Amino acid sequence: MQTTLNCNGRLLTLNTPIVMGIINVNEDSFYPASRATSIHQILSKAEKMLKDGASILDLGAMSSRPGARIMDIDVELNGIIPAVESVCKEFPDAVVSVDTLRSKVAELCVHSGASMVNDISAGDFDPEMIQIMTRMKVPYVMMHMQGLPATMQQNPTYTDVLMEVLKYFVEKVHKARLAGITDILIDPGFGFGKTLDQNYTLMRHLEVFKIFDFPVLAGISRKSLICKALNINQEDALNGSTALHMVALQRGASVLRVHDVKEAVECVKLYKRLTD
Image (cartoon, rainbow, N blue to C red):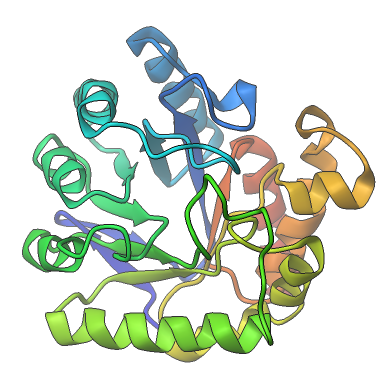
């Protein structure tokens, strides 16, 4: 399996799992504590996450919570570009990922210093994304989502969720490889067009996504698959997140995308103790 990512000349090693910290540059993301609407807040969150051990900072201006609408591109650009520029200037050694499904936003953010693109639509929303990723030559996170955030949780339907998500990535990875994209991360898309049971089916079989020989990213932090199962809200979901993070690591996840970096890094350290 691929164990390194070339992030604009900076080599990120995945021999040991790493943590990606979430910074939402908006007022609408599902977990309020992840939001940062001023440059001061963004830099403060970035500094803490890096000190706590984050290997990647994932910045996004558009909320993708269930029910969220796709925001206007100008609004997205006005939010994300200053955030990326500020973080890259203040923390020049940080690996900054941009969470977007638009090729223009991805391209401008990479020109502004970002060195990874996290696309919840894996190129489905913007057909030019694959071409742009080929040209920019930065790692590309490809996520599975049924539908779009506005409607994805209304009635997620699969005959066999595991086989359908796998088939989706067979096609996506093939297309990306043909285009010349070499650094890919696979994200099954927990909570994006899946019921509670479908999410846990994917979690139980997470290791099968390693067949693509690319790193698997698990984004489960404080999501509904935890809150609904435990009948709690997002504010009380840290313990459940940590429990499932350990499960994800045991099932082959190389990257944990999280709101709480310190606790996730501790989880990785304990996992490493168990497996060394």
